[in-house]
Length: 379
Image 1 (cartoon, rainbow, N blue to C red):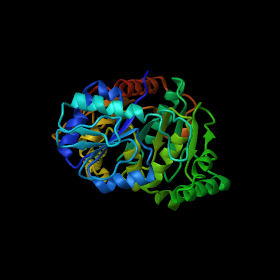
Image 2: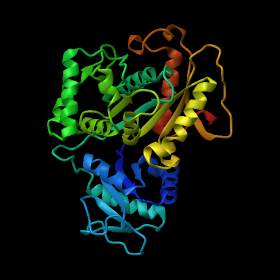
Image 3: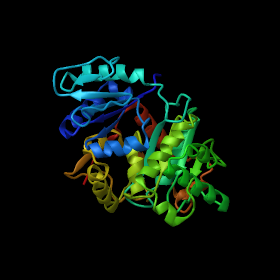
Image 4: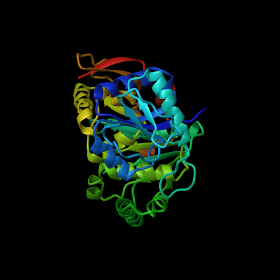
């Protein structure tokens, strides 16, 4: 299978970006491209300064940088003037047919496909990042992240789970681990080349499942103060290790700077919602706020979002949450497992058969690009 290309598309016209996102999602390009979207110049430059190698190609509105070209940049021009991909200042006509635009963009991306991160001379492994999110605590987020990681490993993927919630129910760090985590944060925030090797010291093997694990420091305040850039840098450093094909990120429920960073840097969002009215309403508020938090329209979020219903009780309080709000398909429905009710996620030595089938259904939906079993309205 051909690995995906990482592309950044930056333009102030949100309607234009929504049109591109819809076209990509509904066509073969969804299997070919991982796209990050920016509608503000300052947000793009903030990302660029932190991770100049986060994409193989950048399609950037020409008015933003009339006299600046970086390696891998192509200007989106409103005039009908295109310059070839092998020129020093490549341009693409913004309003040409989308199929032609994307084909030309891929030609440019292929030229920069093996461009490494700054300071790293090895070819990067194509890594897909999954962020498991939830509007409410106790929804089964960590359990889902753990078993999704386990399922990827069973499929032959080299998977890393990043369990970075402030409580750390899956990972109990000792004093030495906390010291190593703090040292990694220091190097990362200073932009030191030592950050990647320091990160390697944090990787542990899960005691039961064939996955690797990075946990938090165990210091509640330090974990609470993680920023969006901290998480984005962390994922870039994981990618720079060139060891993992899948990374699953598990953070605190709700919205925080760290969660925003994970949502921005991820390729897939798996949102867990419990089958009760309160969780449904809080999820609606959470998702409705994403455009403001992430500086984007909802369409790019929807394009990488999978909604998962989790049964936390034997008698579900809500079977199909219908309303007039944001309509999202349900990718999977996780069953109620009585013996897991009081058991923490790390104690699940074996997967329940019913839970296993539901997780496989979710994984298949993600792999195929399908959106789920049925539609549910979240408001």
